[in-house]
Length: 389
Image 1 (cartoon, rainbow, N blue to C red):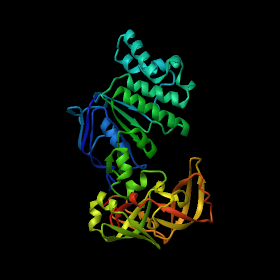
Image 2: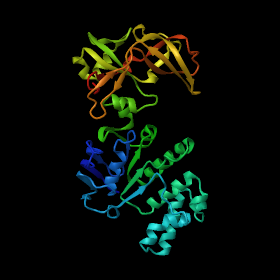
Image 3: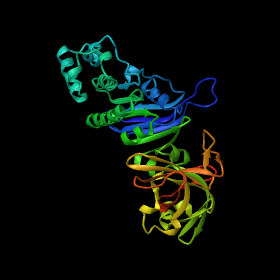
Image 4: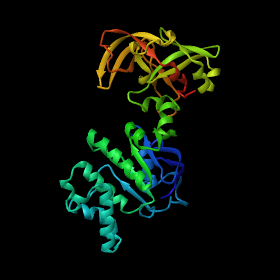
């Protein structure tokens, strides 16, 4: 096991105006499971390849343990990679695929058998050791790929979107398996994915990237509840956070926020948890999570200043919840600049808002419903640069 440190890591390709990775600095603790997440092309896989030694950095440093490894070949970095494509040898048995690194190292046969048996127990592959990869399911093949990494007993695991080829049900199963195995082995792990659900459910911490720039690194809970900017707020969470241009007015210890033709009270607790708001009056971007919107029928005695009416445009039943889409008379905030969040555009006059209602709600398209909003959970961002207050 080892600590991994990235200091000012940058990758720029000749002929390109923008860096694939720009000044990335991360400190990954010994035994930590860190997830690198972001949209396609954000630089997360390039960062992983620079850690692995498969991609040369333009500048910056990669430390594994107490050693800077920039000049070390991939084979000398004491890492093991798990790829999206499994990368198994089709003509070899599961046993030989897992044992391959030990066989190349000419370890004693008895040691190889013992270590393969141990890895097979961990991955529940004991009954498949004589099979070839072609006869296995996708999940079984991914476990074999993990076994080949585990048997090397590396200091660091690097995983590049290992579940993206699996169907939805198998992905859920395998992400819990990977998390279980990592916690059992306590090996420092850097896991790359574009799936924010994987990031939130698997990582000790989540590092969110955009256009080569690290946007936020934090625990899943904090990155969800205290996003640094509108990009983080919109990327993390399903459905995305509802974001609108609004006007904030301070009044006494609390305040009001005007959202189109709706006016909502802002409790003093919001100002206490966001001290920078105390100096803010005027244009802001208001963020509302879907779970903080509810059919008012199910919230008796909800304060008058924390309710509004809207017309339902779509209702989607998920069984446990009813996802209700409704029009709101306020311009949605749209992120325009792809690099530094310098510009937040004003969208159409009317935006679509999504609320997560009680599954028993009778709301249906065309209905005008009274909606209760938990104003203690409102999010506020700078209207010009999208950064959180």
